[in-house]
Image 1 (spheres, helix red, strand yellow):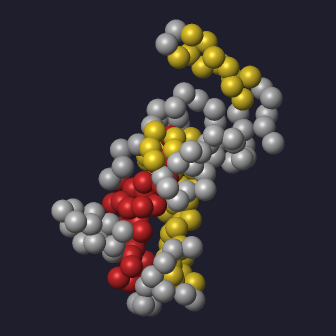
Image 2 (cartoon, rainbow, N blue to C red):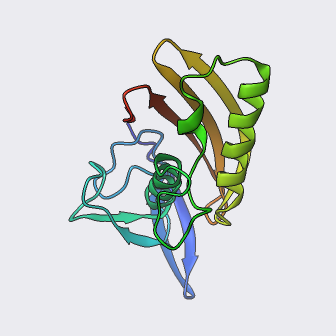
Length: 157
């Protein structure tokens, strides 16, 4: 469902128009807004990738997701890249563990200059941890939600 309200954008002194879409069912991107593409990247396993390409918000969210899914110390030549959340899956999710997981999530999001963290929530469930993040994608000034699930068999849902 898209709003048919035209929105004007200025790109290289040429006025272009687009529509604002509240759903994530766009043909080329699951972003909420039609804008000029700023970021372009490659993904071989993301279902939103058209011809294995991701753009803007989809690419930024995929990059953040990859950062979370990498265990700290796992990346060759970058020992500080990754998340320590995997180390806390078997620990009880008390206030101390929650604050450690939240701080790790904050540092991962802060490492990406394309986003601003608006809200973070750490929730435990029987098989793992869910980190709910609300981001502001800075180039387009869009708000996006991410729910990153860590489960105890070593894979993410």
